[in-house]
Length: 461
Length: 169
Ligand code: SF4
Image (cartoon, rainbow over all chains, first blue to last red):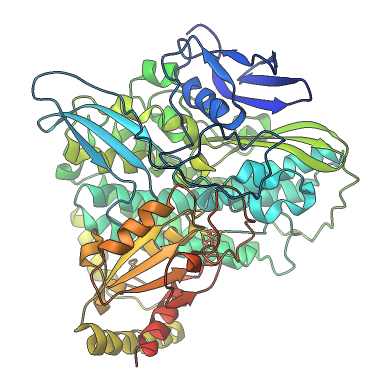
């Protein structure tokens, strides 16, 4: 590793130049590229995860990449008109595009005797989001996988430009529905900074509790679906019931099953911590039973162990985050703060980097989230926070979504959003998925993919 | 493992919300009857996401949890459009998905119905029109029925499917 972890790379357009910001874990670097020759030196050699960020900038802003082997379009697919760069200020957000006749996407290639390709997607079997997976096979064995996304690209960044930040809530909370509370908390932090407002402690605690609720629903769902993808349906029946109970608790708390709208509202007057704690107690027992049972099914662990290994080195090289990174031994979690540590939070990691490790991290994190809720649930009266007036400036915020680190920035000007940029944890982790494939059989792909459970919506924007 | 079965035997079948269960039972009965009448007991749905926030998918997945157990009523989410009676469409119609959605629709054999799920396809969710969104879905497909909500809850989806069956006579 040459430098610290890469979090994001993105562009802001100015009158005569492009500003490219490279955000690392501990620093940020800025480049100014003249508009006549916007040539961006690539970071791909040191940080392979920079590739999608850079290809996206090429599509969005017409930047030209230098020092990289991958300059293919990313967001702009077969029918996307040429020379169209929607994030340029000169581009009208609502204009409709005229599809051109398809120009085929040049997939990566793998050569060799008997090597064949299996294209899968964008529409998949079952109820899942669309995306394309191109497998390069030697018989059953996967040699390589190329992940191709952005089918769901809704133009969120452009959609939010020019919006009053206070009116951006309904869209921000629907960027990736199963991570909605994390997005809301990150947006809350941006607004707090922009209005120089202090967050009352009781509200901070209440929001942290909601974030753990979201994690519990998400992880429980996975704890059912991962074994289900290994043919063990009984686990799905149990875990999906527990997930449904948790989802209903979230509805009791916020009035919405996904907590949409929760963070911009006050603590509800009907908030009843005792009722919540009774459910926590019950789930703790059920989780223990589930855990005792499932850890003792040898044929299931036969499928989990050593399947889809992401080595610690690869996790580092690809700047992986979230559950994926923690299962490969990297203690990366945005909750790693004195505030959370005081609540008893500790970073949960595993070392084997396989499906088993990712399953175990989730299992242990549900238990930990329940403990956190025990500490966070308390009688709280509505606090009626008043935000001051919005001050122009550039703000950034982080949150640990159920998937991993979420990074959000907003450049505010004249009380409006000039530039909105968000990096979903999936955007980085999708780029590392292919490192888990070599040596595995194609039939295990759904299992490996599910064990990472990444968001397509948050990735595609 | 042994302990699990012991607990399981001790616990038996639990009905946690008797009233809700009763209501669900009535809905289920209606659905089952409708499916029997119009689809010979088996309704095959191809779910297509054309640009959702993924909450609509999560609620569809929840339909198969033991509370709702939709499969028991003869409703199956199928892998291939060629096996489907209904296309259940969620999400805004993105520029990038449009050709694939139309392709999937074409592959569904007649007679077929398209049901939109959630506020997105009709552009009623908070998302506003951008270059990347191809207008409301009904400009591209014949929408037979709509299930509103953001997202519609599993219960609302079940009610919506029941209403759809009623439109068939
Ligand atoms: S209707 Fe609402 S919940 Fe469903 S995909 Fe759209 S934004 Fe998400």
